[in-house]
Length: 246
Image 1: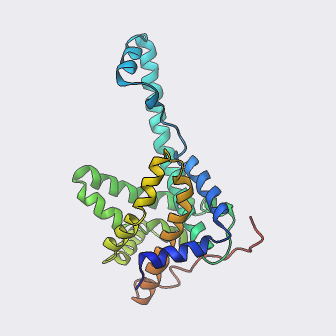
Image 2 (image 1 turned 120 degrees about the horizontal axis):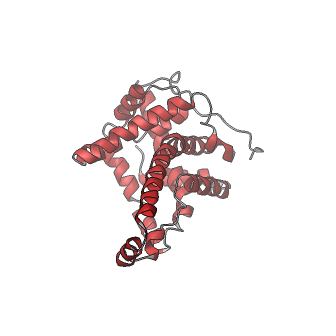
Image 3 (image 1 turned 90 degrees about the vertical axis):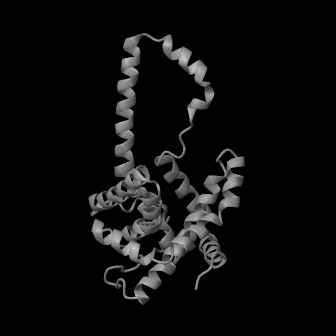
């Protein structure tokens, strides 16, 4: 039986000699996923922003509204076709790094056939969770933990159908959802420290967290194979990269 400390120890071992490569990979992914965008709203108070908007001509406000709508649509498309896929690539990178040094290009390895299947499965999974959040919140939280392993399953087998990926993740996470929540909660102290650094510290924490969650998936994968929930034909493992590659 695994413990939080065991997974974290394994994660630190996996990062030994590879931390900075993982750091720059996570930093790049965070920027591409929107994590590096500065929130400019803090520069103005609501009253100042209201007075400024009232001083603008109406036609300009219409253009601002149109631009905002276009920006929102582009943001959604970026999230669907880029951010969701990058999450799968990140899972693959940290799973490969458990065995041997993996190049940063692994983060982007999913942008090839069957790229659109990864987009579809990631989008439909996220959509179900989002709908659950809007409906009663509780279903959304429940589904979040049921389908927590979908990105890892896609990282290992990008040809999985939506129904199979969600079904397999749900089966593997049976009886493990509380354990995974506790594992996430174990990073609370680090997260609070990151908040004190205005979020900058989170970039240094990401590699450690991702490596730990990769260890969790490895444990769950072994459990699934032992219980006959899947086979090595469906989940064939992760390719080892030559240590000289970057």
